[in-house]
Length: 76
Image (cartoon, rainbow, N blue to C red; front, side):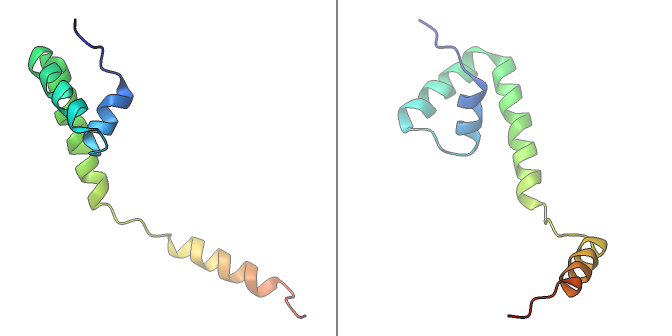
């Protein structure tokens, strides 16, 4: 009997959150379903790009936060 692979299974596999048994089953499913293998490869590429992304606030956002904090009266 073939197990249906869910999107959640795919994400767990990509982020290495599957049990060894789940990984083996997923690997078997990728061998049977070539479209699943292609989707896995594409998602892995996206994950790799996200992992390399450095997120920083824009200077405009920083200035807005600093200006707002200066406008507050924080005397105790």
